[in-house]
Length: 355
Image (cartoon, rainbow, N blue to C red; front, side, top):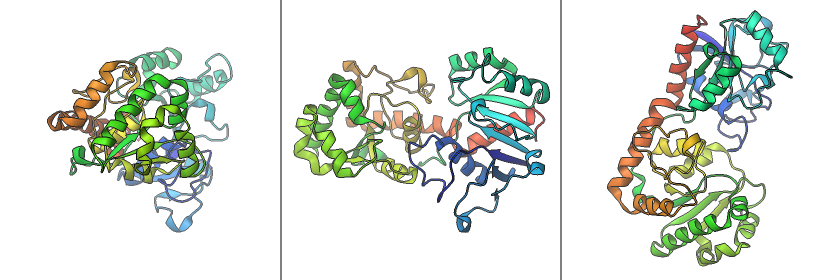
């Protein structure tokens, strides 16, 4: 059995899935949820009291973190730049891509403290499978023996029961669709014209997008349709929804009804949410895509004509759709579910004698 703690800078106001989809605390909240489900983890705390709704607070969660508990707990933290001098845990795990790690400046003293007081009891982790360059970069800074691959807890489970080929939503999953339209107008127009052609062919299809903006759905739609490249979409306005900032539970609900995603970039969480439901996509960010090592991963530069050719193949060929979608789902199940995260974490802790 092990006790875990997580450093959070913002309070949990309601449930772990009610935070903004684009919150920087996304992975930390998911990790808390994963720990609560893991039988080998007996307790989870945050470094300062954070859960504001005591009536729904899980029994394994502690809303205080006294010194005695600190010394018995492993602290998971988003990089050394968030560390607290007043915390002295049993061991440290830094979820860190090396971005912002300053080994000669502001973090030099803290890294020296780790090496002297916590030798063998601190670990830096990289969050995607196959991020070899980031692993090497981080290892060069803190030592290869202190770096482990620990894929992020991206999805709670895998949905095997549904075939999304006949689903009715085309989704633009990355935040900032209007920014993409502004800075990459030619490529955005090609994709949006393809979407318009599908809406014209199938009157029951819908197009939805995560805008990442504050404001009402109507005001965001007004901005979207102010771009000349949306001319072909205007006649389908009643089948187009652009979401403001929404919580993760709503995001998963939308993915559960999605057939395919389209965007200029589909790395990060959107790839893994597709994997959760077996939704195939054409990868456009091969170097940083978390499922790039799936055995059927398909890729095209988003600025190339191959992107739409492959997208059309997925959209219209059921056998191809199932083959790619199943590959993504199997890879996500192996590496990015809550249970996979906890299994890997416990193995790392056991290897370091931190259990």
